[in-house]
Length: 135
Image (cartoon, rainbow, N blue to C red; front, side, top):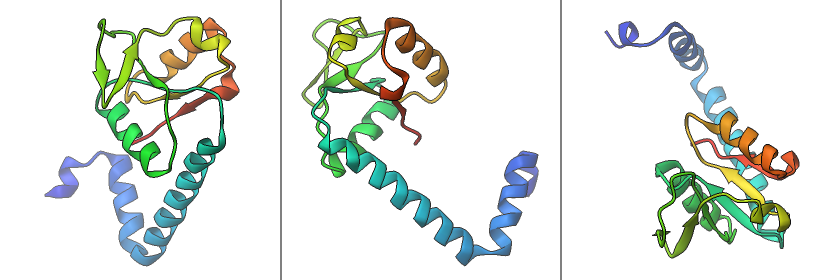
């Protein structure tokens, strides 16, 4: 019954995992360790770090970065309201100001990451300074 609700790609993934559960678990743990190492490296950066996205993904990204010892400058959001804060951080509209700071921007948005990346690049943010958080 569960298989009927899965799409073809998820069904193939489920069958692959089912064949080698220990191997798949080890691969998953290795991938998560590598991701954590990459995020921890941000704690050594002195430039400003913003999370672009003030929704659930943004909050999850903040939790991950906090656990890795990474301090952020604030949140960016195209729908930011004046004086909005999340966990004590200001939520601001993305402006060219962040370009001058040579800021790092972590995109935390489930559906519009590509559009946000293009927006940032069009504003002059170096693509090398744009990272994507995936939940």
